[in-house]
Length: 470
Image 1 (cartoon, rainbow, N blue to C red):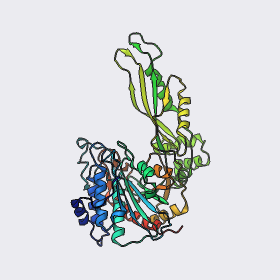
Image 2: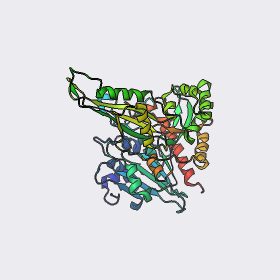
Image 3: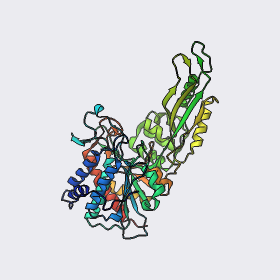
Image 4: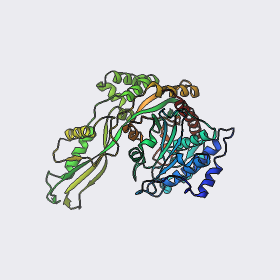
């Protein structure tokens, strides 16, 4: 571990100081844009980038804004020198009150320049959008949180509760997971009563109208299973029914046809209950019906036409990789597949494995897991103290837009915090197009207006939580 102190390069401090000027009448938007641009244009892919460099840049800006060395922590795992993380602390007036933790990740998914219309590591503003790798996932929220901490310090804000910034590396995979590492090595430093994270935001329709403001109240966890069949093989001129590829193919076909049962927790129950009124029609009626009776096959069939609804209702498993055979003229001696499952919160991985074994019903197919990175963590309760400030500020900024808790089919670093007792929720105030801005794909983009509105929303929300009474 390394702490930011006098060792920070003088040039970095100078660059940070230039952007740490007092907020202007525009609420410091120019300084925010500069921070955001620098973050996006700092390559943080696992293959060629450096989260450590990005963390140092944020640290320099915080230091220039007046944070003492003791409140800025650059944490770099010795075995991964490019995978640095940063934690910054704005002390609160009530040291007994639980802190508010702001979590975002610095790393991004890989991007090949030859595939993109624009350079993925230049932030370009065009036709009302920001373009670039990470402009949405997750450097918009990372920049908003870092900018917020700078503004708090410049304004002389003294919150009741301590506010902490936690920017991590490795959420997208490829090296190691910083959130996991920090929860196991720096638990006291990051301790908090609530954590705000990515994983949710507002939904826009095709015309750009606001539909709802979603809040990540729970999320699935990824578990990978290895399906494998071994066989003595033989000459391809003498085929036999006992063929490793055929056994594997039939097993995967069984998985494709198997449906895990519908399950509800507070998150997806609230989502389908609230969205039934927004969606209306046949789909809205099916939402109401399935909440009343999870075994309602007709309602399930209607909702499952939508891949997102289908994923929110149950554990899902899908084949993602195949590897079989060793020669064109030989019977296969080995056939192997990777099946990636997204497991409903609180369901043990072994329970899922046993369901797959039963669905496949073939002892020749071995189903194992290489181990799971994400822990089995129950979702935290969505209390009035959590939801109330979100609803209040949403109504102030976007009257009539409903706040809708969701079960996120994907996974974020929130799971690691929930597993150690820090309740984490995904909320951003950033509204997304129906295509989600091509997150993880080509030409990632996000609306400029959405980012700026999210910056205002989160500033108000964090202050609301920071002043909240026990």
